[in-house]
Image (cartoon, protein in one colour):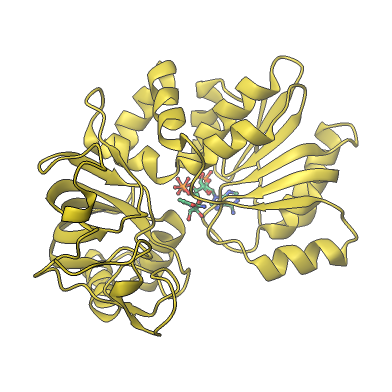
Length: 346
Ligand code: NAP
């Protein structure tokens, strides 16, 4: 077997010298695998929400066109990295081969079912066929193969929940894990996109950390999701606002917090132009956590400077230690959230 690089640089075709994530094209020929790779037979791709929303818009919601766009991206780049949003997603599948350099170093054997916990934006992928698309939950059933590099993290699929449910929550498991670190007892926390897949998990974790003296305010943008989130009873307040309307967001949260604003703002939306609303709702020296992949670093940094707001802004690293277990445990602890997620995603 050929020797591979830990981070997968051996599969980068263009431009040379970069890592697989920023690469424009990676090698997705799996006839022979490298000695430190894991080859996986892929069942379902969970396309990142910002990416799938953009593709759906480009395709005017047409399923065949969505399929075409996905196949074109993967055939051009050898991976599923949306050229507009730059984001990927993750997959579930069954281990087909494990490189000899990894033998005895992984708690994994051929035939195990796993979820990738690294982005599809860096994962070599070859799609033979798209079988079906669940447009409402961003999931694409495929006949495909993918490679996990030596540095690529994964999670064995738990046997106490359906695979599609694990796939859905593992896609966003960095968010509740980071929320657990950022929110302190007594904090006022605003979660934008609070009714979404990552939003609900963040609200739950924020409430647990903020405690009875803290307050969690969930922002949704539709009447339907307002009702759903209220019924979950994980937020102190649920309000309907358009997160792109920065001034309305600011005024509403200013009123609701008696002029205090939020200690922590968590952004879980899947659309652009919500940076200023997030920053304005946060108090001086507070923290804004941008989990959303539709976030613009330029808009956030220059926008905060432009209004003279001294806040710490955190980039939503998809990885945090024990993020998969923390997130799966939320579903094990809270039956109402689990029931909702089974209904929506499984
Ligand atoms: P999701 O389930 O699709 O939820 C998106 C949310 O955005 C919905 O709750 C929706 O609320 C809200 N939203 C849309 N337009 C809005 C508006 N104008 N005002 C207020 N809220 C609005 O998405 P997800 O899977 O949780 O993902 C959330 C974000 O995280 C996406 O940007 C995704 O790309 C990103 N992500 C990041 C990472 C990472 O590693 N950092 C990993 C995975 C995903 P309503 O339903 O009420 O309209």
